[in-house]
Image (cartoon, rainbow, N blue to C red; front, side, top):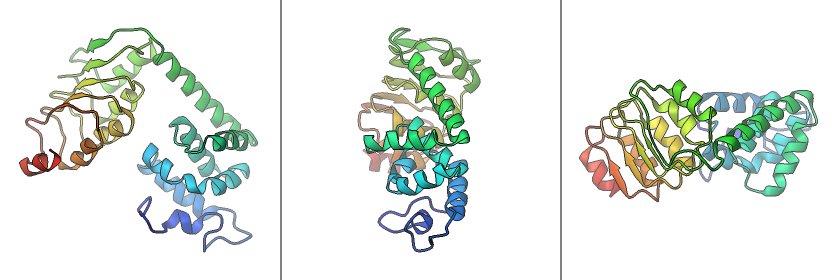
Length: 243
């Protein structure tokens, strides 16, 4: 299922409020099912959520009726800062607070945001190199136990991290230098980093699981100055095209 079709109506448009398959008695079942499938699969991402801002009216209506998929989607939009119009933020919060399940899930979002603020507080090292024993879980624990607002350079070379570590690294928007040399970091992780780390200047992907698929994500990282793709599954022709 395609999440969004550029310049064309997709499934979400068809089943949202005012869509051609939505009538006065519509309870949002198909919209809910479609959202649930997408959000639980691979679309709980800022890029996707920004694209469905046009559906906020439908999401608000169904969330106020305690539709769980719409509640989850609105919570994700708040958590990932994916609401384009600031006036909609208050509307979303009010809709979430209007039902018991929405209130509970919004409270969880607020707790995550407070934890994120603690991580981003001024303080901590500017450079950090982690032990080769470090895993994704170790990185998550490390970031939960201190402030890293000053961190600009993170060396993960030869650690046991995977693409899953990107979920934790996006909490550090000040990162300028990342080293993944000889790790299992791959395309999925880079896709996520490209959406959130807008200050990254140096990126070492030598001996990682990166493929040609990642080149689209790299092209979106406008601040990159140095990039190492040695011993990856990227082709010479693709790299030349990237330049």
